[in-house]
Amino acid sequence: MLTYQVRPRVFRFTSGEAPTFPAQGEIRFYFQPPQPFGAAAGGGHTAVRGVAASVLFNANSGEHTIESKEPLSPLDVTVEELPRTLRLAGTTFSISQRFASLSEMEDMIESVYFVFPTLVNVPFADPPYIERVDGKVGSTSFRWELAEWQMGFRTTTQEQQEGRFVKAWERMGVLSERHRRRLVAGLHYFHVACRLARAGSTPGEFVAEVVLNLAKSLEVLFPPAGDARTRDAARAGLRNLGFSENQIECDFIPAMALRNEIDVGHVELGLFTMDQFKTIHAFTERAEGAFREMLERFLSRIESGQADIAPHELGPPRDKAVQLIKRLQESGAGGTG
Image (cartoon, rainbow, N blue to C red; front, top):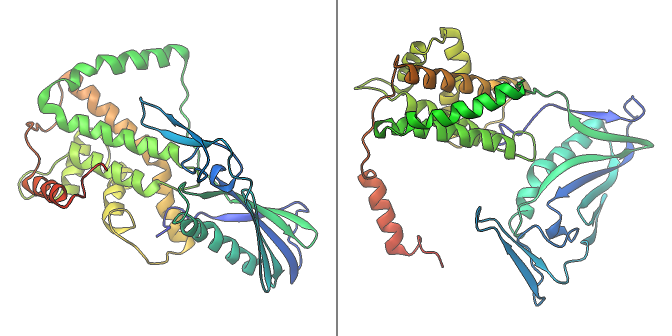
């Protein structure tokens, strides 16, 4: 739980130095999206009861929102909860109290930042998240920010980018062969992983799902034969693509290991140390580039006739899947109403 969201953070003080404690402080949390907090008329799924509204629907994506003619006013709530005062004004939620130490203040921030949105999510129609945190302690203002971050970019030229687009189109013929359904699936899972990595609004928000799709990409591209194990099959396939043992163990296999062991495919309630978090995050932050290179090599070798994907003949789903769908139909759980 929260394995991929917990990132090293620091306090940035305007004075450059931490204030002395104990001290009176105010912590401000800025929520998104704005509509359910009365800070915007549209853009969400929250409508005012008994008020005329317009529904916007995108027939291409299925995205839909509603906008009440008379929207909510900015939410305005004050709760006196000694020894603290809580105030919600629109999307800004503040906590004012006396803090004995910086550690106590950070514990409060982490509790609200990671946990409180999950509680608000239950009665709200639009899932909330906290985009940033700042405040004041004593006479010193502060921001609660990431301590560090890994960023990856890819340089290109006009000619290269246009050539890459043309090359991608030419490779449509590679995917048209019916026995290469595994390749279609592997590309799909990688695409989903990349989309999820860009879609997150908070650090690490969908990284577990990114790892899951990277692992799926490996598993479908390099299926085990006979009694071989999944990871060993992936290792063999990656060796055939020219990756070194160190690259395989550092850049690819961890996706499969994390899926099975650490808060991806199975629940994990254990509390990792920050050093352990950093090790996990180091892989997830560099994985996309390695998988992109792997798929580039695979596609190039198929095009040149040097290799091919393990064939998969199209057929019906597994019997267990068909039976599950049947039970859903019979129970009414698969209805659209």
